[in-house]
Length: 89
Length: 330
Image (cartoon, rainbow over all chains, first blue to last red; front, side, top):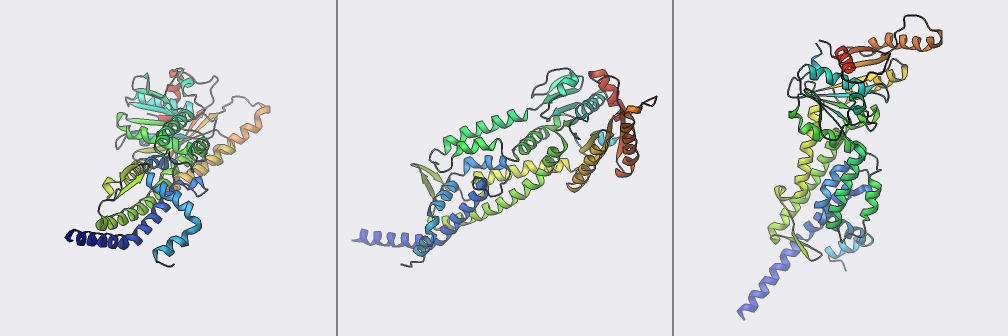
């Protein structure tokens, strides 16, 4: 009984925490996407920063490139993501 | 006494610029011999793809300093080879890291990259940077550079690279700020990709991207501070007594002033001195006279040294020392 109540509260707070950072996470992903785009823009024709710098940063950019790719994949449903965030159904 | 040729604050860097074929390599080699004779430990580096520094010294040069005479060392950098090796090494690195990246076709990208605009300038800048970072091994470092256009672009690069780095650092700072905010609530975050877990860095000192940005910024600043300091760097233009090289040198003079890079000396090479009048080359002699008349007015406050055309091609140490003595003076 006591365990159940504890579990309930734990779950309650976890979801509360997740909700509270949702917007910041969205912003963070956007920035990561922009960072990767600025850096690797030459792939798609954006003016490019020093090539040597891009080369040096590339090995550390796993997450950013992953985010950028996912972002590119979701391009057609960006409103879907925003709608989900604001619970517009 | 041309103090801009000698060390004042640490080592001295001399860049020889000019059109292709005006005698940059011979002139820079001559100056290097003369300075080494004066007892300064001198390194001369050719970053010109044409590579004839070895021919002038009559020795085979490599990409490591090789002793020529007492106090004088020379090396030739093969830019194309450097770029190729650099990209290959990087490709191996990245292939291993980005196995899961199928969308970005890295292989194609690298194929194109070696011909991409700017890569040659950046590679040249990297080469210059590496030599400057170990500059304290020498008293004087002399660069025999590729033809004017490329060299000027290379000298302008640090400024541009710093603007980019500054912008990227700003964005990165914002990202890390957001990550810290999320971490405060969620605790440490992991990023899972292909079954591998990575901790998401949120502080500047643990973020490899920020570290790389900062160290790049530091390196570029070192180059910029060295080449804009008149106590450390001098640019010497070599030209022939003709109108076209004169215009080009004038343009270079303007550009260097814009980048705040000290420009101190013009060497006019291959001046024809005749004892009797030869009608068939009168036109050329007239043009030469005109250039020599105009040049004093154009380059005010800049030293001008005239080197005559010799009856044979100046090669070997003795010849070089003779010409070097003319330029360096006593």
